[in-house]
Image 1 (cartoon, rainbow, N blue to C red):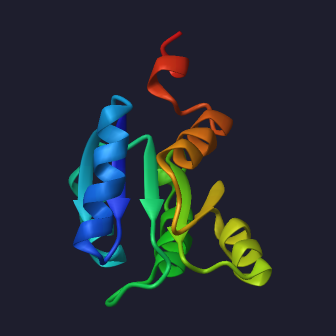
Image 2: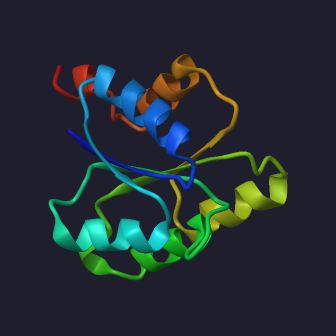
Image 3: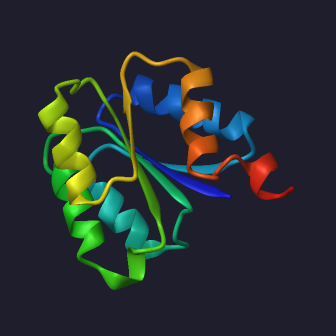
Length: 127
């Protein structure tokens, strides 16, 4: 399984990508939504994208909206992983097309729980 990790913090990208690799994912990283769209265009399409909200160039909500507008990317699952914790922000992200929402700081266990809910734990998906 493949994952695209989108976050402007290099440290956070490394944390998320490292956790996903331990779960069996191949990962690609992007520092903002524009870089992430470029990565999607270069393929192959990931099974999962973890997306930060607050980034320069293109924020996470704009990225989610643009991905959902492209039929070729509709099969990709998106999870917001962000410090934005207000209920209204969560609703906006889910309405824009995100499938799940994980609030920073988070534990690796919390990330695994979200992936399990989405049916995206590699060992579960392969079972």
